[in-house]
Image (tube, rainbow, N blue to C red; front, side, top):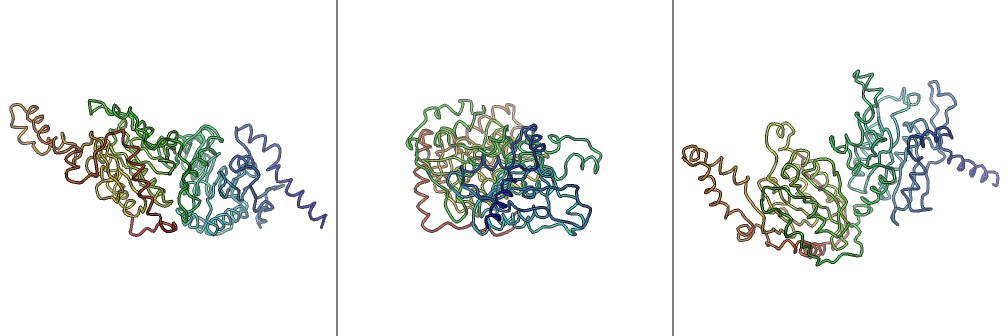
Length: 515
């Protein structure tokens, strides 16, 4: 037995060398940590337990790679604790054949998905790998689909998140695109179906990794990524922060923490947040910071569709998802990209029982040829599906503009809210009043000797019907509040709504066909 134990210890010790000293050195020269260092950064000290560490590459009939050496077959997997809660990890090892996908490597990843589904724990993926190994996948027949299906079924059951920490192509990039939260590191991350050499071969185009699928491209333009950061430590910290607001799985509720901020705090700055000239923009992020627990807001997709703000925060220690229009960008109009961002974030919150808080200031859904080409209508109605199946407390505060379907998509009348509040500055209409008058009275304005005066008089006549007080008179809002009351009123409504949690949590059911 002693000889066997000694052999086991030696094999385990050898795993610490990754793909060899030279390849580890190149990894460090590229400014990257090793896969095992990343795992140590992720988990609470001393809690990681590896599975499949003794895995090796498959032996195939084709000519093998000379001196092929694949410790753990290029992927570190196992379980540990993140801030005292269990989670799994799959970390690709770029020092082992570029983190490429091998047959045993693939089986290990599938095993982690299987265990995560059975044991209901989150999985954190740390991507840093190329596509399939040619020598192992030649002659393997039809490409597999079952692991993508398994990953799809895991979504909404237990959190599935990732950091892209190097060039990821092929299977790795496809799995990464399925994750519920994706962090990318500027300068080193890449997500693409095929890398620059494959692009050059297939299309004749010459592109570098950043142009093809870098962090800024995917986190600001395509929306495939969520948050771009500048270092691996920031990426790991972002993953941990995101997880801190969510439950371990959909069979439990999100974790509340002891409150450190006064629930009755009323920020005087809110009285002056909206300019006297209502056409001038203001920063909705200042409203969010004044309303939620101090330093608790974690923005998701900050660089993508900036006219929509989404992120997690806490109210008196309770996790909430914040959805807010940003008047500083296109007046807060909802584009197709903004609708996609909103719908995805709402679905994450609904899946994991996170209450939703809406801060509304929008002139409506963006219109025009570009918007129609982007299918803004269909995207907008996807938000209606998200509301229909969001069995979580919903709280709405109309700060200023609440026009048309844009207002409905931001927690409009009858969306199942536990409270609907309006500031005195709230303004309601099917469309912006000025443009509505222009359309409805086109003939009269054309015939008038003083069209500008007539237009102004009509606006003044109708304006009295469109504010917060008329809406309250018709019970289209529950109350009109002093802006300083926003935080305490939201907290009291939220804590009242949390009384609905009289039964054990369970995964959110969805029906129907998404438009």
